[in-house]
Image 1 (spheres, rainbow, N blue to C red):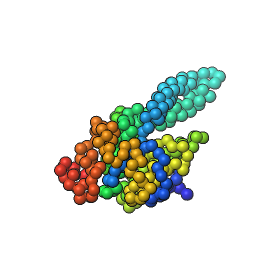
Image 2: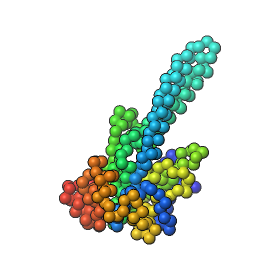
Image 3: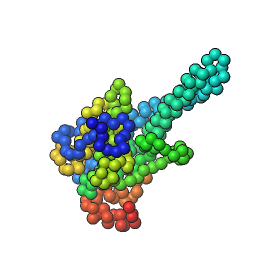
Image 4: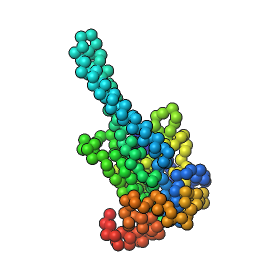
Length: 275
């Protein structure tokens, strides 16, 4: 059965249902949680270094192969094998360009993400906060100007009710999968954005992060707020390590701990936020 979300995302493996799970976290991506909000990091430092190097090598090799493929095309007038060389060259250019198209944003995301790129979930207001660098995300067709302005930053507030989890896989024999949040129009399955929640996970069944967040959002007992890197009374240490100096707006940092929509509205009013 295909995904109910439209448009579907490349590599879709399965949709995830919302609701609490009776399973402990068994994961080190939870950085901090208190009675109001939790924060999950999405970039492990060791993985970040490894994939930065991997995609950098892929970009270098892809660029070299593009040039090499072009030489095959330039030999089109070779008396014996010109047409075959041209065919190989065109195929090589298309393949290498597709590989670069996928490798460049992955390299950028890994190279320029900082301090784990945390995502924040406030269960009392039902809001989710993201602050991340990205090259571009998930779309097939793009305006050429995107490549001239690669550095972008997404700092946004979302409604938890509009976020839906799906599993995608990387088509490798290692069965690595990722959990992606599909941002939908309210009350519909029409996707308007995507957020990477839990990247590069072994096995399609590894949905501990998704399950813990769902349990946390409904105050289910399996979501222990002291399971994280920092205990619930170490908020200052968490913010100094993961939040400070990363461009989070002051109002948004205050909103992490908002205990109601009315309090959140007051925070936005004090900071002249009109969204």
